[in-house]
Length: 381
Image 1 (cartoon, rainbow, N blue to C red):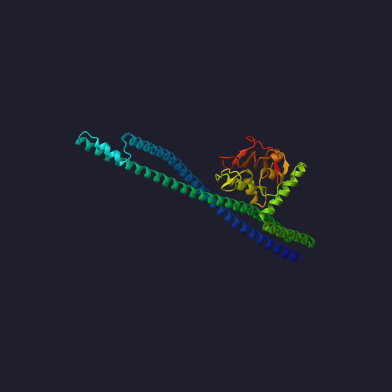
Image 2: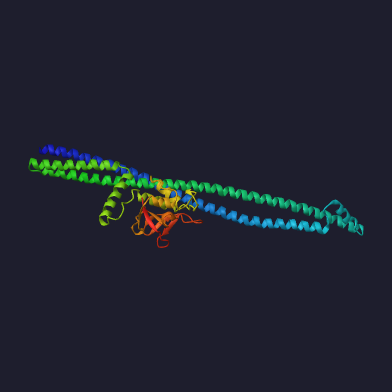
């Protein structure tokens, strides 16, 4: 019986080693993928920054050109006025007046001088008109080129921002997967240790009953191996839900009035929201994309990436949540300003008295502070 027990334990220990090897390999593969995504994020963030600098330069050049355009328009207007004054003063509006101007000379010398004057004025007028036309064409072309370059840069910046957001989602998914695999690896290591300990006990057993007990311990270790293997295959959302349930149970024991924690993976939500604060995304009334967000458009966009469908307005989103005091808000909860149908603003709470939101016209998606602008209440999804 003792030999049978040792054989059984040897099989269990081998199973533990096998699962541990698989778990370690999976964790290493995921870490490699995660490192690759982080490298892409760093590269994309650099391109985003460079794109913003390029756009700022183009916009600065466009502003400078607008000033030049205004100056040249004034010069053109001045030239036109000067021509009109010259025409009125010399009465050179037609060939007859020109001939009269020459014919009224008191001498041949004066007639020649007046003829030269007329020719000079005509040439000057023609040159001025040609300069006006060239200036207008130059201004129009320069303005067109700058506007085209700015639009092209804006398009590139938007594509980079979208790529950065997609990478942020990949990063959070891989981090959740890595955490799950690390947990499975830890369980497999514990199971291996238990199997090894059981093998020692079987070897040291002085009776059949002791050997059988030790073998049963090995079977329990094997069951733990199987459990860790199954857990390792769970997706990050299941893991987040399990963690959330545990947190909710702990919270319920301390305060029965507190609602259950959100089923949304808050770490993933916050990671994505944080990435959006680095993209210089402007506030746009009614905006729901990376080209521009309003407050509810931002929350709808972020939570939508994690399977949570939110309504379009702040008031409607408030109606989708369980209302709680701001003091009980947890990272991933929503914060609201206003009451009832008068709710007019929403933000994502990140903890520590801070939140992420799309503030107002002329500003970008950014962090805010409860101490600086206190919300009316919090809402849990």
